[in-house]
Amino acid sequence: MDAPTTTSADSGSGGGGGWFTPRKAPPAGASTDQEAPSEGRRVTPIRPVGRPERISDDHAETVPAQSAAPVPEAAPAPQYASAAGTPPQPGPHATARPHAAQHGQGPSPAHPPHSAPPAQASVAPRAETTPRPAPAPEASPDARLIRRTLEEVGPDADKVTSYFYALLFVRHPELRPLFPASMDTQRDRLLKALLTAAEHADNKNVLVPYLKNLGRGHRKYGTQPEHYPAVGECLIGALTRYATTTWDQETEAAWVRTYTTISQVMIDAAAADELRAPAWWYGEVVSHDLRTSDIAVVTVRPDQPYPFLAGQYTSLETPWWPRIWRHYSFASAPRSDGLLSFHVKAVPAGWVSNALVHRARPGDVIRLGPPSGSMTVDHSSDSGLLCLGGGTGIAPIKALVEDVAEHGQRRPVEVFYGARTDHDLYDIDTMLRLQQTHPWLAVRPIVDQQAHLQLPDAVREYGPWNEYDAYLSGPPGMIRNGVDALRDIGIPVDRIRHDSVEELVATGN
Image (tube, rainbow, N blue to C red):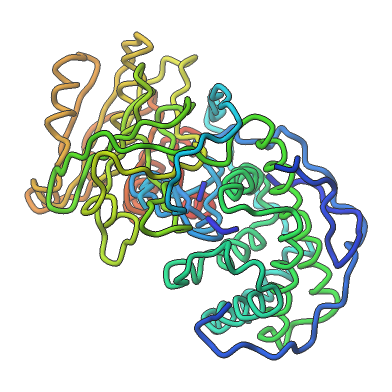
């Protein structure tokens, strides 16, 4: 939900003006597609009932997962082009964005006043034995009310979305500048992310890391604590209008409590992040390698140290489309020269991807959001790595291979590189050179049109994979089919890592 949606459920508020007042503020630092609605019934200023139990930091981002999505972020959302997802795209095992993370303001290279902190690895816990599946917990009363609302408004999703933005921009015109000038690419992201987060409010292991990541990511939009009540008010207003048969005071109170918790987690995460990192970095394009007619490898030099881990992703904004951000995976492990590389595929109507592939040139300056994602390597383990990369999803897989090599480990790494045609194997030469250099690495190109075999099916032909941790990066469909295939051959879900929140939620992670 790169909003102001890719890539932490905490306590709620104790009341205050309106129906939500942040517990603490971080350090200081319109028109729509449809006719504007009349003011209609405003939500009565509600003070949250009680105070949701505070969720401990044990639920923080400790599980690797793509983005996104990124759930998409509110203002622009993640579409992992080689990294993370649609709402919530938390960061996985608990998260964001399929690791197909590929999913603006014009730069004036001023250096933000903060220094970047060292990155900390996020390692997903591994079970020594396959745990018995636990019975699905019974949904909480609030969750049941929220899902009932979602079922009713589902058929009118487009109308709900249009009405939400109409309310937001009419009642709070000061928020319009936080969004792109054209809402075409943003339209569904913020509301969809909020609704998805609310729907899965009981799944704290997924939503806690996701929401914390989302709160940190929203700093780049200029989002402030006082903006959250306005969004919540208009969310409730839109639901009230279209959930005509199920909406009542009890349902409204459930939505207020849930949104209060969601927003407080995001506010707290942003406040903590402001103490240690800038809201964004500037990056100068130093090389632009057009590999195919629609795929480019773009390398940038950040204006200050940029800490990240192999397998993670970030969001990029170009000077040509301000306030439109998209998620892309890092295509290498951290380098001694500090340069960052991304594999970008131009997609139809893709504003950011087309600008980066067809317009960007050395000397151009873009902006980068903070690093996200937990599809990283646990270097305390000697398990093998089973990596599935499709399309530009090979970028973070390449980074993982380099990361293993730099740590001097000789653990086996099996890479399945999926593509529809030979032409789509744009980085196969690089992967084969790595295979020649490292005897522990095996690279297996899988071309659909030649073998008539889908990537997940090909994985079943090899193995066994009992002693491997699995990593997936690519289009959402590939992630979904890959997770199913890996579970079918006996790999426990806690050893399957990707950054697609949508798929993580669907598989119970």
